[in-house]
Length: 179
Image (cartoon, rainbow, N blue to C red; front, top):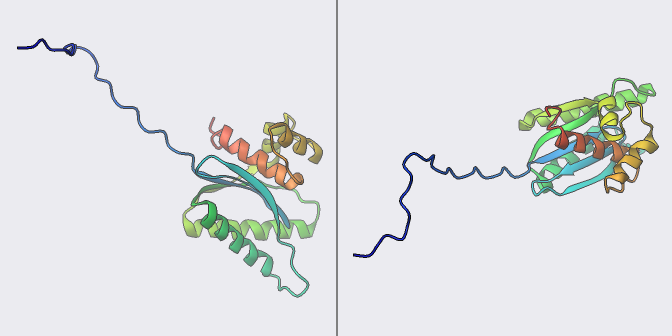
């Protein structure tokens, strides 16, 4: 009879357990809500894309068309890049004018209703938190936010896109403020 080639197991040793598979990144959407909405998305494969989209009403549009277009845009993003696992948006407490606050409120109401209908968690993040994470200053101006995004390898078209990128990076790097 041949000698065994495998060493016998040490009965006192802890058996090696297989490592759990790493959870793949989930799709995260970050939004800077406004007539020109900045967006940044980390897709399930880890790729980050960003841009801006305008919800300026047309000359003959009714008052609700801006929000209908926003709903359709969210649905298309979810269909093409989703499913969206979570949404983060810039939580603005002060607006430059009444119209800006009305547009923001309408977009936020549309976003939260859309997310609730689909069971997608969402959360607002204060502007100062985003700016501090990106630049180290809670009151950083638009140029500083654009420069911060560029220093991280992004090419934002404007401050709306830069804010969305900063928000997405904050959500990823702090695990939504938990880390």
